[in-house]
Amino acid sequence: MLWLCHNLRNRVLFAQYHCLKRAPVLVSLGDAFLRPSYKDRFFTASIKQTLGLCGPLMVDSGGFALMTRRHLRWSMREIERLYQNLPADILVSLDHPPSPNDDRITRERLRKKTLSNLQRMCDFVPANRLMPVVHGHSLGELERSCDGIGHLCPKADKIGIGGLVPLICSGGLVRQFSYIRKDGTAGDRSMWISDALQLVRKRFPDAFVHVFGIGSATTAISVLALGADSVDSFSWRRVANYGAIFLPGCSERFPTVREGRSHSRPFVSKQEFAILMKCECPVCIETNNVHERLESLARCYRHRAVHNAWTVLREVANLRNAIQRNRTYDFLRSRLSPRHRFYNAISERWGVPS
Image (cartoon, rainbow, N blue to C red; front, side, top):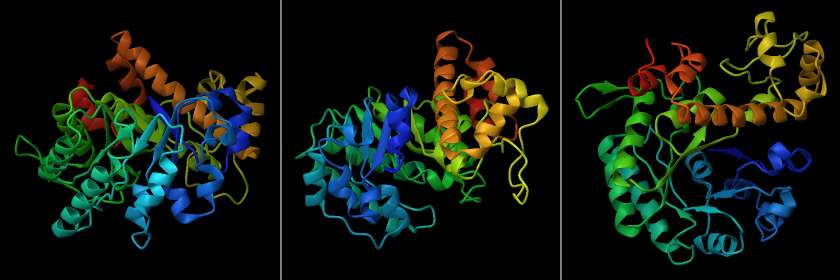
C-alpha cells in the first residue's frame, strides 16, 4: 500500500482526478507546525471534503518536521484537540525521531520523549486508530524502542518505522552510515532498513507495519518487497516540481530538452518512448502521440504530478500482483538495476542475481 503525501496546497489536483481522489493520502501536522493558520483551516472534521478526498486518510504527527527543526514547539493539548475531530483512519503518535548525527545521550532522550507522548496519546486516541512509531540507528536502540511501545501498547496493530528519511534519500544524506548486523558483519543503510523491518515484524508479528518517508516508485516497491505493509511518498510532487517525471524501472527523467535547463537528470530517450506509450494515467491517455504526451508533461506541473502519482500507485499495484502470481523475482529484476541503493538488500531477500 502506498500513501500519497499531500502538502495541503494541491486541493484542485486531488478533486479533479479520481485516481488521486480515491488514493490513500497522508497529511502531516508538521505543515501546521510551520503554518499555524493551517490548524483550523484544514485539520477539522471536514478535512476530507476540504481536500476533495474520499479514500483512506492517515494523519502524521509531524515528527520529521521536529527532527529537522528542533526549535519548533507543539502542545500535546493542541494535538488532542485536533486529533479528536479528525475522521482519519490512522492517527500517528507524536514522535521525536533521532538524527543519525545525534550522540547516544540525545537519541536516548528523544526515545523517552517519544514514549512519554505515546503514553499520553493512549488516553485520547482510540487504540484501533493509533500508530506508535519506533526509531533507532542500531539494532539495540530499535529493540529498546519496540520494548517501550510493547509495554504501553501490547496489542498494537499498527506500527510505524520513522527517522529513515536521511538514510533513504538519493545520494545519501548519511553516506558513512553503518551498523553491526546480527551475524556480526557490517551493514549499510539499505541493509539497515531490511533488518529493521525484520526486527519489528518479529516483535509485532500481527501488526500493520508502515515505513515513513519513502521516495521514488523504485524505492517504494523495494521497501515493500523487503517486508513493509505500506509506505508513503511525496516524491511524486517533488519530482514534478523539478520538471521531471517517473517511468517504470527508470530514474527521474525530463520529458523534453529545454533551453537553459540544468542537465541534472536524463531526458526521456527514444528507447523509452515505448514505456511512456504504455502509460494509462489520466493525462497520457488524452493522446496517442508520444511527442504530444512529452510536451504535455513538460509544460504543466499538474500533468507531471498526476502522471507521477499514477505511476507510483501502479508500480505498487504491479508488485502486489507479481507477489500474488509468484513472479516477484522477475518483477524486481525488471525494475532494479545493480546500481540501485536497495539492490543488495533485495538480492539477499529475493535472490535477484548480482
